Length: 354
View 1 (cartoon, rainbow, N blue to C red):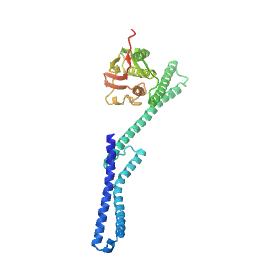
View 2 (view 1 turned 180 degrees about the vertical axis):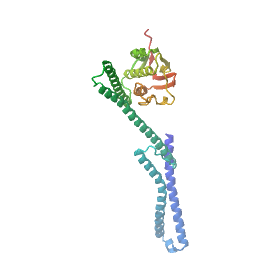
View 3 (view 1 turned 90 degrees about the vertical axis):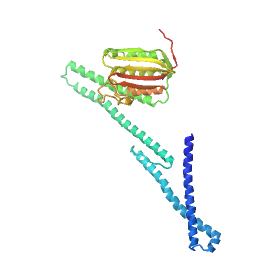
């Protein structure tokens, strides 16, 4: 508030000073001009004694000199405004490299800094939009092309039963992948459109996580992955369906990147008025360069897109946790594993049912 008030006073003072200087210059030049006219005899004694004539001459001189002085001064001030207008036109035209370098008055310097920050943000959004379109197109095109190709091969009557079944399995797998992508895009659109969490009710989050572990138990058995779940019963106020999606996404992600005979650990502990939930695996890990991007849309560390998934799961998880007033962070050491740590508001610890 004080900073804003100081800014307003500063700008008012700047323009007041400018007007005062213009007025002072006008008066000084007019005075000097009248004095010179008197010295050179242009203004005789009769004219000087006639108050009306002298006033009229002085007024005309002030208007003319004031107009010229104001025009010269305003050109400098309007130059900054024209620079700003040109920069906004370039920005509106899609040139996000446009930058302002206005230093005076101080408020124009602040205007430049805010404009440059806005240009940076818009440039970043444009890059994200382009990446989103490119990745989205790639993720949709790949399974469609695959399905089309194998469907054409299946028209061959000379295929053996084993080959036909193999190709049908691929078509089914690609169809499932396409359906999952469509489902994830819809889920992401839904959670991104939400600013207020709906369907909030207290429920046992520990029990929900245990149920998710059971749902994915078959997947873990196929890879001979062992899981340690140190999960207590805590009551959390939230959207039960959304948080269920979080646990399934994180567990499925851990299974995907954990090698055969690997280990996954899920733990939970009280952290003041929040609960801390940790998902840890001993997979290949994430590189330092990729770590800041793990929650970005369609981002996959495997640029070949050979791994299952479409890079939307963690984006959805991040948004859901934000809607619940919590935080999620990712830590990883290459070749040692990855850890996702979540903090959620907790109502209370429930008594053990054992």
